[in-house]
Length: 356
Image (cartoon, rainbow, N blue to C red; front, side, top):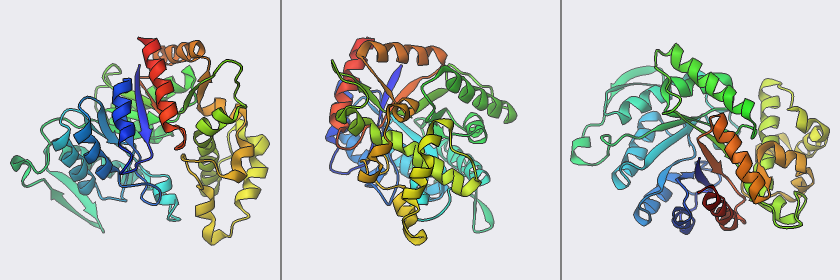
């Protein structure tokens, strides 16, 4: 099993990446949400100069907040600094669009973005559609070293639904999901990706295709349980993102919340909808994945944590990771709260050592 750390991209907090490399992490994923954090590509450029082994990539870059040629250009520039250890995570956007009161990119736009980006990162000419016009585009001076499209840049597609996961199989080298830590959820993701590959005429090699899940991990101390302030602080922001996501899906698609959220749903919706409609996009994502909004702490229950995080004694977490690996999971990407990021990284470091 590989381990990655998802970073709240912060241009002056690269020490965390350096320490993660020393702790044995395999990858550092730099979050891309322009209304929340620092620019992810700037952070990667700094990190490239301070690390030598850990892989560096976006976690995830967002469709159409930067057009496809710009995204390909940005990650190919990082590939000059960290050849052979640069990757691109890409998704259709959650907070990057929602915090501007816009819906994420549609599936057709996502597919076109992936096609253009993948071709450009292979050094090929690619079709690019913008403002109703399609033309071919290609890097003109890659041979002079302005960008690196010689060393491969794997593309990891972030998608939570079957159609998006099929795009990962059709265009990507991996899939990123935030699946519950359960065997059946992992197998469902791989099936969707395989079907997408088949539809695109690609051979799906499960051994080469990387499945990554986003979660938070905490190792319980003696006498501690999931109601402790430490666990709530460390895992709460990750757990609460499921509420933010479910609210947006219900608002846009009239989708009912998952079963484990229904007992708190009316209370949560009432809280969010106290905010005026014109400012509600701020309230929905307050503290998103970073810190606990004081009004939302009451929703962080053991049930909510268990649905999206991996928490237990060291031996229990080791056993759970083994089960997920046997089911086909390749990497665990850990997103702790901002305040607990160094402590959480060290806890995962102890897990990496325990796994050998």
